[in-house]
Image (cartoon, rainbow, N blue to C red; front, side, top):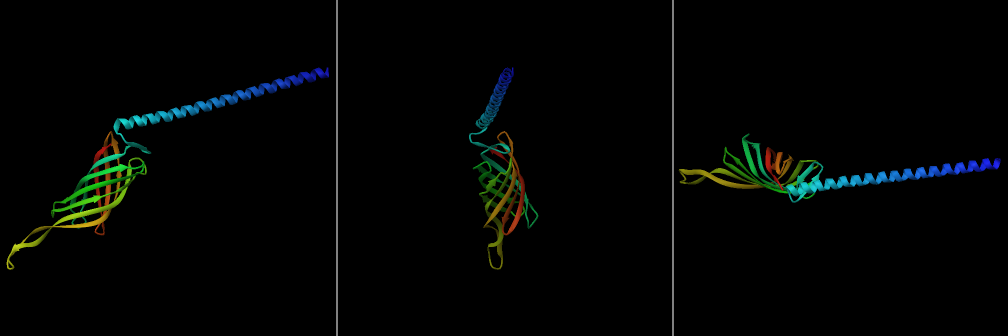
Length: 221
């Protein structure tokens, strides 16, 4: 009688252990399947994002990159439009020109600019050329700094003829050049391929800083 009870208890114990082992194996298999399905879903999502990005790039421009702020152009060409106050006469001086920018990485880029400024009061003409280094920390925000070369034409009164008793005085154009630096802050807004960039710039020339504020318009490609 005791032997029969012992065998019955042993058989029941072995059966319970087998059921527990099968249940655990089934659970591990289900977890592994769920993990694989989640990994495949995430991979498909990344592939979909990549396909969307490539489609966007091919639709708008041939060379582009993706940054933290979204899709951006690798190249941009801007028409500069700005105004500044002359530090010595408080006269409003308008400035215009062209600037080209090229993104080397998602955050770093280089550019080249040519700018002309005209003073209506004393017929002063200023040409400025620069090679800025551009840094985009986030989105369309851009910080720039680089060397600046400026050449100015001033109308100076000089004796141009006449006699010693009655000299003839006229205006003569004189050119002067100077090296300096430019720092700038811009924010690029993409409207399709059109770029709108409010900007503020500070030029250091002749041992003084001069601020310029304006709005740049252009296109990306």
